[in-house]
Length: 445
Ligand code: NAD
Image 1 (cartoon, rainbow, N blue to C red):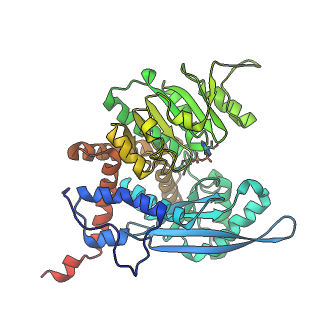
Image 2 (spheres, protein in one colour):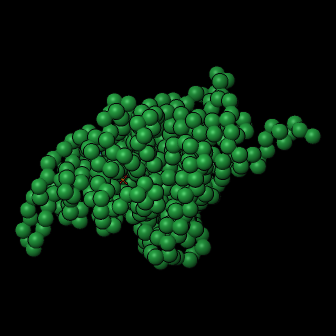
Image 3 (cartoon, rainbow, N blue to C red):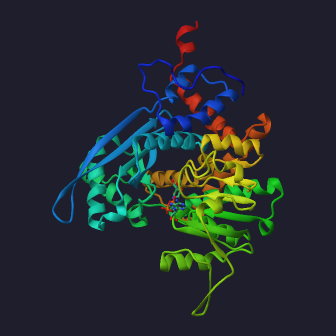
């Protein structure tokens, strides 16, 4: 039963470490959801802190013979519903606070999709573009050396994230198996197919987002051919989703990457843009007829301009904190689907809600990736591998079922979709935590 509750999310006992900025911002969503669901004080207390945070120093022999020490993190936010699950991010701006907030999101994402996992995340402070391939390999294997006791197929399962890929996942699984003296495929997901990866994993995040879009937009009477879309971030998730939407008939009018974007009001030929980006590493609107490439009518835009375009659908698929209180008043899209993790700050959320813009949150929209990671883990443990059709059909089923449940919670309680998504995940987390024993259990007769 959904009802109001007065308890604070964060324990006011000053002997406990208070959540820091990013995590505190992430927790605001939980705070709001708590108004609409009855949850035990024990559950709230547990969810207010990450369960365990590991910081490691990773010595790496560089190609020039020098030794460099990198800092890495692995966080278990909660593991009541199953072993931790979360990607490993390589980025110069990785912080412990960021990794904790990403682990917090993973906890809710796995509960929302009803995957038997808790929430975890990892990261290394590094700019991988400055390292040779051999240095990246030594760094990846070195990271596993340092966190080996903290992970495992029944403890915490790694996966790819920003600037990590299937090759790196293969190295990590291989290193863990060497340490354990036993092939342990289930400790890492997102591996190459030849090392026990799953069909469909590489496209799963975009495909999951596509299924969510296909379920909800018809509820607003949106027809693909009349629906304009802008996508920020033309990487693994953004470019794959652009292609799926293009093939389904949506009009993709703008895409961008870290260098900037392009805008063509009549729609972009996404396969051509993709081909050009792949071969030249830049985004350009191109037509390729035989060997001739023409520029279609378009203009180049900044990433900020892309976010405020007059479109029906806006899809942030790049980084965190792209829509803040500063630019939220200028957003013109009617629907936003968060493919990136945390692209909208909690302050911007309030502004968008008040302006009637429907935001479909990251913990639902980008959950296709972790869902197929779960399928990979299941296949590794069973030794029974599924076809691409089986993977996609199971993904579609899961995304459709949980999207509909979130939608129903939002309609019943007249709340925004993000809050409904947190209510849905929180309910499952609360049930699992309460089953381990609550204050009532020990004090009532
Ligand atoms: P990626 O590295 O393949 O692509 C990121 C894209 O964003 C690139 O095109 C890059 O040029 C662009 N970009 C970087 N900085 C930018 C900026 N300032 N403005 C605009 N664009 C910028 O990463 P990805 O795997 O596609 O992930 C994108 C987002 O989706 C991340 O937030 C990630 O956490 C989230 N996500 C990805 C997955 C997955 O399975 N790939 C799963 C869940 C969530």
